[in-house]
Image (cartoon, helix red, strand yellow):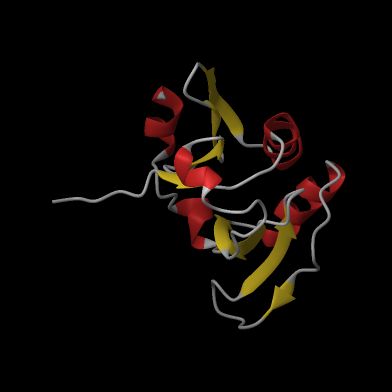
Amino acid sequence: MDWTLEVVVVPVSDLAASIAFYRDQVGFALDHETRNEHMHVAQLTPRGSGCSIVIGDLPSQNQMAPGTLHGLQLVVADAAAARAELVSRGVECSEVVVIDERDGGTLFGFSDPDGNSWAVQQLRARADRPLIPRAAAELG
């Protein structure tokens, strides 16, 4: 049986500001924003990812203080290009650090407005072998 991780709940204090940050600055796609008498949430997905984040006021989100989620990790084929893209959109990022010359040992980080922190790992292999085949991603 396959098990897939498809959503990570990220605790934030201001839904509108967080949507703007993740959509407009980081570049995640806004899949939906839902508001009803029970909730106000948004789901956003990084380009090329099979896993999304959900932000808002679901009960599970209300149990976590905004800014307390650390160590989320994104993977890109080129860390320097990814960092440059984020910086050009106004995201404060750490410098690119090479911990190990082998693929996977190059990283940088950033945080959202609440302080939830992200690591961005370079795996050059993703350029040729994405986890979600490009043809399948284009259908979605």
